[in-house]
Length: 257
Image (tube, rainbow, N blue to C red; front, side):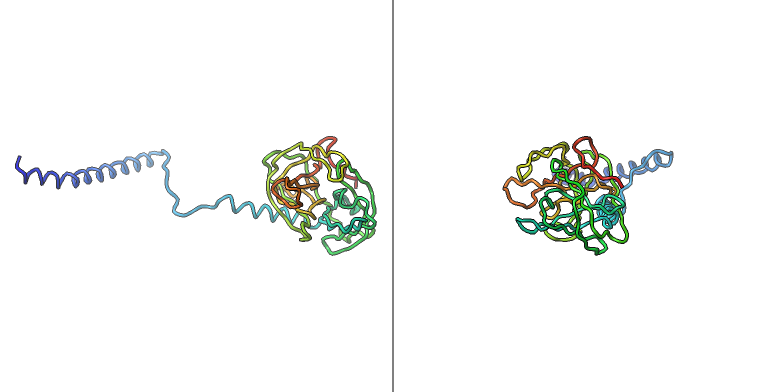
């Protein structure tokens, strides 16, 4: 074979292979089309991006906040060691407020502010230091009393929401998941160990204590009691704790309506 013939073969071979490849692709498309027409499934690429699950979370959070907002309470206490601010939630038709015991324990005076702006002094109904929960009776309940809906137990991985007054920022909502169950924690005042706690990662800070921990339906599943910080500082690093509303001897004691 001459040099010219070999040169022509080298020059045309790539074009020939490209043509063969194109014909093969057309044949595959025709086979797929025929298969689809016969009733078999056919995979197609979407022409535009469909909705993602990230759009659902804000909608759920907004629904949760609307459900709990009328029941939220700002709790303020004057104690010998200073002024303390926390959160609370209406738990029955008498307008009684459940909060964390350490927010109002030993207080000389307690004031509660309801969602409609009603302000009132409050007195002690009951305290359960071993559960860090307390119930306070307002002297002047709001004109319209909206008790929170109480929920059942939770599982690790469940969505959860915390609503309260962290750092004095009223009616703040944060979202996360239940990250642990049946946790134990030493009380800061040396009053023993809290047990059976819900661990969660929705952000909480000073002022959140006593506020409700909620499920996706806006039902109260716990009362926020503490945050964990290995540095010893009082700011959130990803672990909060709540006393469960349901669940045996470790649950908060809800007064009857």
